[in-house]
Image: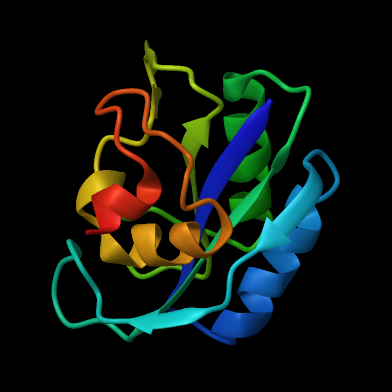
Length: 147
C-alpha cells in the first residue's frame, strides 16, 4: 500500500531528528522518498515555540494502517517524544496522512489525516513527492489542495 507521512520537529537538532526518523521508518516502508526540509512557523500549538522543520515522506508498505501508526508512534517514543499537553514542543512528530485511497475512522486513527488539507507545512512537502495523489475524501489532488 502506498503511504504518505508528515514529519516535523522543533526541538534539538531538527534536521538530524528528521533524518533519523526516516531511517526508522525505512525498516517497514519500502521505496521511501523524502521531500526537502521546510522551516515553518508553529501552527496550531500553544504558546511561544521554536520554528519547526517539516518534511513529507512517501513509500510503500505491506502493513495495515494501524500497524503503520504503531511503527510511527514507536519511532516517536525512540526520540523521547512526550505529550504533556496538546501542541507541546516535540523532538519528532510523525503523522500518517494518506494510506492509498483508504478512508479510515477508528479510535486513535483517522486517515486521511483530518487537518492535512489546511496545513501548508504538510501540503508543500507532499506536493514535491506526490502532487497527483488524490485525497479520497475531496477528490482533489495534493496540488489542487495546495492551491
